Image 1: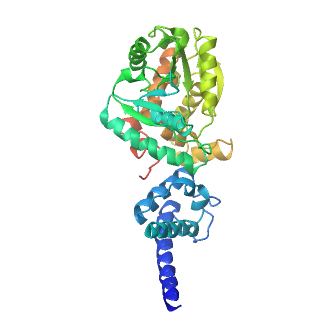
Image 2: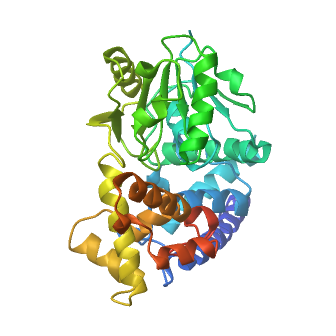
Length: 96
Length: 280
């Protein structure tokens, strides 16, 4: 039980670090502060080009590959959805 | 004859067209004489294919076609169609089309992705002028679903049918226009961009203001100057010179503000800056 709690805490810290790094990158694109749950498409930040730049950034910053069904705009709509994607892909890679 | 298509020129348009074909399951041989350009082209096609997938522009359940790169013009033999997307210079297109025309079997459709050189001018270089047709793909070809088809006076009905079949395979709609310098899209768009640049040069408005007015007031999806950056300012200046020469009208000549950008190497998105600055 303790072990699970510790892991959750670690995951939470890691997730928040992931989100912070993503948010810092998004803010360079937006040239403004961006909340983690802001819909980047509605805010006019997530153009088709920026979405592709985000893919390249996430892959290189977190050493993951975003392929197949994960390569869809919905995964890039907020900082939180991108952080969730990164976390999931890292877990999948660690399990493999 | 296989369902494979050969694309000549691994630049912006050549790689974009190759991506469109591959995304729809059609194998492509991408040919360029410059090995460095070819190597970059392969990377570019991979990136663009992912871009298309990200934006939902790849049909579900289709296995992407294979991409083969080559430095040999002769590798076009056996293709369903040959698409040339080399630089927008008539001499280069003439030279390539002459060579390809001597290699491929009768019945192979020859497509020029010219943005405005009259097809009948290019037809003078090929052995079977009835098999030559223009398809003006828009950039990026894998995202824009309409193309401008230029039918030369000698282009046959059979060639037009083949073009419609090919466009059907890649889910594109073609609007067929009569052969003329700049066809429709370039004849309208290029002078507009030139005038937009002229306005900025004269200090009437900034780059951002011109684009904001054209998008906000006139409903353009992107402004003319951002579009220019996507086309490439060197290509645009060349195309304007060609339009001016063919139409015998100096008003089409590129304005100084546009030429200054080209001379400074600010060629648009592909060089990292043009009317706007780009990262990555």
